[in-house]
Image (cartoon, rainbow, N blue to C red; front, side):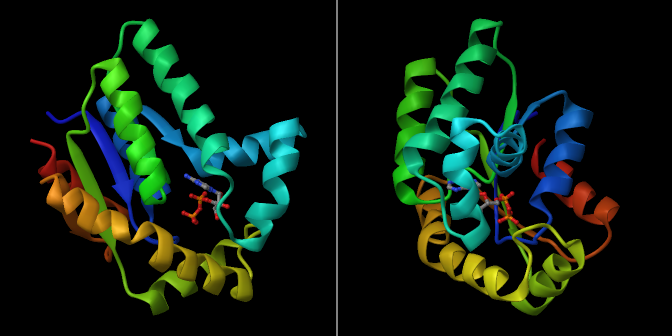
Length: 186
Ligand code: ADP
């Protein structure tokens, strides 16, 4: 069973929901950079203060900041004896993907699969609007989709070239999509 996974896809594709389910059922460490950043914002930490305005605009927080978050969690897990992990919302651009590759080399670990969740833009926007998070108003959503197209979408080719990419149709019920993803891990 593959147990070192990335979840890739546009905002609203359901990465968080599927990542959480899968991490629970497979006993993987679930690292969502969006959740971790929101926790920092809620705690009012210096890091959270730095991230808050950027997130509200729908832009990406600095690579150094998210990388520091991911690095500390993966190092902690490796020091505690290792195990599987699932990265959700990271990497989000090629610089982050290169930095992740370097970090994993240091740790002697490898990405085993990149799950790409695919969904139409119209459905994405509808889902995000009904979610009602602080950064989920229509203008910010459109901007997040643009940022995704420009900065994150190049990762599709990046991981395809490395033979790691597994596209999944992200329409259907949570259970149906979950079953499609589980089938890819064998
Ligand atoms: P969504 O999947 O709906 O875009 P996330 O929870 O993954 O939501 O991310 C919310 C916001 O957090 C992003 O718009 C961005 O500002 C910030 N963020 C999350 N992950 C990263 C990352 N890897 N690099 C830069 N910014 C990030």
